[in-house]
Image (cartoon, rainbow, N blue to C red; front, side, top):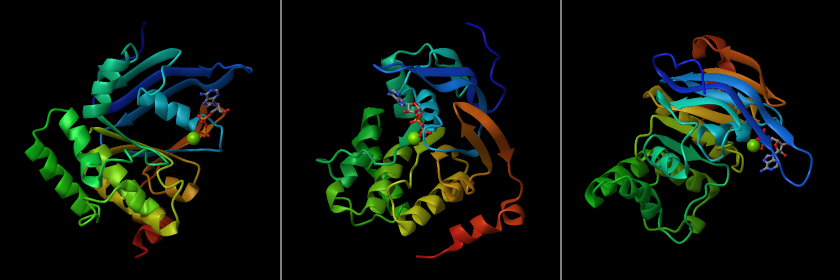
Length: 252
Ligand SMILES: Nc1ncnc2c1ncn2[C@@H]1O[C@H](COP(=O)(O)OP(=O)(O)O)[C@@H](O)[C@H]1O
Ligand SMILES: [Mg+2]
């Protein structure tokens, strides 16, 4: 298979990404030949209506679904030929994912949910504990270590999911409607935390149908009917996005 090599500094490089869902019904062309490059340190939002193919695109980039055609590099590594085992390693070390419904392990404590991926990636128990403690403190969850996920609010569960996704310091954070099931305070918290991690250099690719969420990113891709309809890199946030500054400044 051929495909343009990724440019220097590209965390995600996709050429002709294609996915058709085939079930009992008519095939659904969810992603139709998408070219996408996300550079190190970018915060990119993919927005568009329900059914546009946003989640499918994110799943392809995270290896949760296999592409039908196209080429994909993550961190300069060609990954479209990877099998499940190699994807699992990549997701453990290089790509963190958060979902709308958190997907925490319900019978594990908050602490264990966050430490588990670190241990699976080969961290010592002591290092896993240290990373977990640092992240939970950062995310305002100190004191919740021994709680089970079901005892937490949605916003708290999503912050635990963020800690779990970030514990191995992945080069790329993928987020699919990360505030989709949260109230307005939870939404603000998630936006603020994503903005903070981005400010420290975290590369983020976030899917959302919510324009307000999308405008927290520094580049907004409009996705429609399986294709990129628009791709806008925004300038100085303070100069061009007063509305967003307002969102992030709202205090709890
Ligand atoms: N596993 C699947 N099987 C069949 N169709 C699917 C599957 N996943 C998604 N689709 C369809 O693909 C299209 C794109 O879905 P999705 O990527 O979830 O869009 P979005 O996240 O933008 O709402 C929709 O028409 C959806 O119904
Ligand atoms: Mg979706």
